[in-house]
Image 1 (cartoon, rainbow, N blue to C red):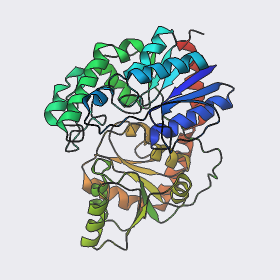
Image 2: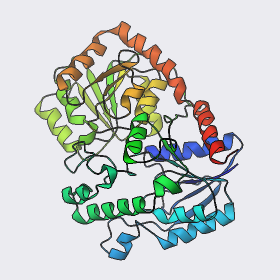
Image 3: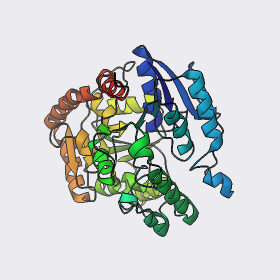
Amino acid sequence: MRILLVNKFHWMKGGSETYYFGLGKMLKEHGHEVAYFSMEDEKNIKTGDKEYFVEASDMNSKNITKALSVIYNKKNKKKMEEALDDFKPDIVHLNNFQRQLSASIIEPCVKRNIPIVFTAHDAQAVCPAITMMDKNKNVCDKCLKGKYKNCTKNKCVKDSTLKSLLGAVEGRYYRKHKIYTNKINCIITPSEFLRKIFINDGISENKVKAIHNFVDMEDIDLTSKVGDYALFVGRISKEKGIMNLLKAFKNVNGILYIAGDGPEKEEVINFIKENKMDKKVKLLGFLNKQEVVNYVKNSRFVVLPSICNENCPYSIIEALTLGKPVIASEVGGVPELVKDKENGLVYKYDDIEDLTKKLNRLFEDDKLVKEYSKNSKDSSKEYSVDSYYDKLSIIYNKTLNW
């Protein structure tokens, strides 16, 4: 089978790119031929396969013509036509394509009767702000059912009236032209949580399939030990709940390592100093994948205190694969991964007192940590490459009517 993989970024920017490159590797290992369609960038990774790149899109341009190209880009459409005619794929598998690549790349696929599978890594299909949070980082679902005026009214996209208006117009365009409901053949969501949101928004339940993300740990030594610190891995920002975690840790008898960077870093540093937590909280900064793996392997447990509706965080499935318990807020698709009192503990996202209790519990109870560690390893089998490939193959074959 020949599969054209599409993603706006062709370098390791985040979870979507981890999936995009991992998917390409998986498909090739199972005998398929893949090619990539993305944007030009000096950070792009050379895969050795056919690659088709469009001109990079400037999302901060004040030029109205360039701004509208996030909705429909004729140059990108032409490049997609060239890629399809050259590579002749059996399936086009979309990942993050909205805005920078635009809806224009859909039309050539439909015209050539090439089936489209779309892995929705976020809620952009129903939320112009992508995160289902307003500008103040509060959970929000006001734009469901196409009520995009709320996005403009509340300036949900980067607190900008123009960008929010553009996001609302884009949403209306996708809805009017039935991009998700008719033109895409199958949508894969990495959680049942997101699947239900899409169905509630009007997408047929037969079109949306939930498959949790996979993690490729083939070249990684999975042996680990019970360490003496809790580990947070992620963006240091409000929606990731980092300040709630620090507030809880004021009353925790344990050590916290924070791996990552982000806009709240200075606030985090100041909070640590003001509360004299220098000896119990260590900032590791941004780490590469191997460094993260090493810190996870040597941790006692991993914490994900997000206040936003997480989908299927790689930080959790990687922790489970390495046999680590997880304490996580009960948001989005997280409870599908972290089974309370089985492979970790969950708490209501804004209940700092409960978070404190659960942090202390895993620091104090060695027997419980070992029990959850074993269960974590057992539950991680669902997130293997082979398990994911088997489920994806069924979708591909049904989409092609094979």
